[in-house]
Each structure stands twice: as C-alpha cells, then as structure tokens.
Length: 224
Image (tube, rainbow, N blue to C red; front, side):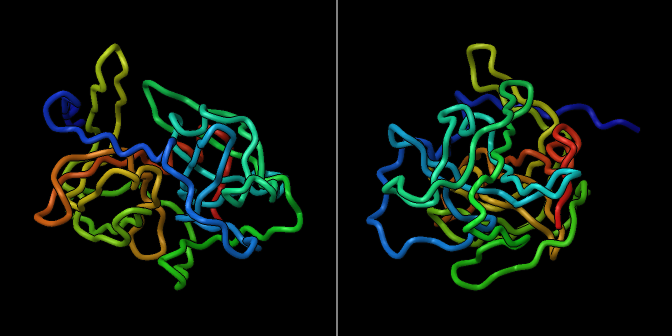
C-alpha cells in the first residue's frame, strides 16, 4: 500500500543546512582526488559538498550534489583558491526535487567511488531505496559522521514561497548548518544526500535526505 506523504514545514522545524556561502577554509596542499564528502568551490564564495561520485554511459565521472547548491555556480574548483579546475554544472532541479549534477572535467584529478570519512575511505558499490528501520549513516562537513535509522520515506519539506520538495527520506540522524549535500549511506550502498533537518547533534534530531536512486535515474548515471 502506498504510504501517504509526510509533510514538514520549514517555518516550524527545518534548519537550513545549505553550505553555499560558507567562508572558505585556508588553502592547503592542492587536492589530487575528489570523493563523496569533499567540497567543490565556485566564484562568489559558493561551496558544494559532493554527495557521491557517479559516471554516465560513456564513463565520464560526475558529482551528485543538491540542486540548490548546483545552481549557485557554473564552474567548480577543487580548492578554495579557485586554482584547480574540477568541473561544470550540467543539471539541477529545485523545487519538486533537490538534486544536481556536476560533470568533472579535470583529467589530472581522480574521482574514486568512495566516501571520505575524514582521511578514511568507505567504498560505495551501488545505490538502494531505503526501507523504514534500515540503518543509515551520513557525513557532514560541520558535524562529521552520525548514524541512525530511516524513520520514514516519501516525506515532504515545504520551504515556503512555493518551494516544496517531495519524496524524501527521513532519518533520526542529526545534522547542523554546513552539513547539506553530505552523503548518506547504509554499508556500501548510497542512500541519499543531506538536505536539512531539526534538532542539534548535542541531543539528537531529524534529517531529510534526497534519494540517490532518483538522482541516478534522472541523469542516466550509475555508481562505481
């Protein structure tokens, strides 16, 4: 039986987690690889967290990101100084959905099918549509790794102003501002991208995720 959609109003519980206009961290050694959980940088202070790496039918690598973030720049770099080109935005969708795709264009970088857990890498072998009660972890650039369970599917967020996103995953993992776009996964399977939530990692919370299987289908991509 089809579950009725769950609706949450941003005016009451949603904490905006977009990491679009964060102050860029100090530059360090130039990156040589980009993985899920890493950041891409655009002009004007735009910053997107890569959810997962994927490829098209021709093998070209792409980054899965939130739609709100993908729309903030056309050209992306692997470093905050904007000296290492990484890719270009090739599609984004918001509202209705909240997903986007950046095509990697720099052959000098590598794009492993992994998630960066903070210097330790988790291999991602595929994607799955989660079920209620399934274990899930996500990586946020602000709060790091947090795990919990899926508490609902087919959830809806109303951001106000007609900006409604449907078909989301809800979990009891916590997230805070800056975590948006981070990868959510169950074992080696990709589940979603962090969008937003309520609560605080000091005492728990609720987080909403854009399903990965929907993104892959929309852009004809696959994980590797």
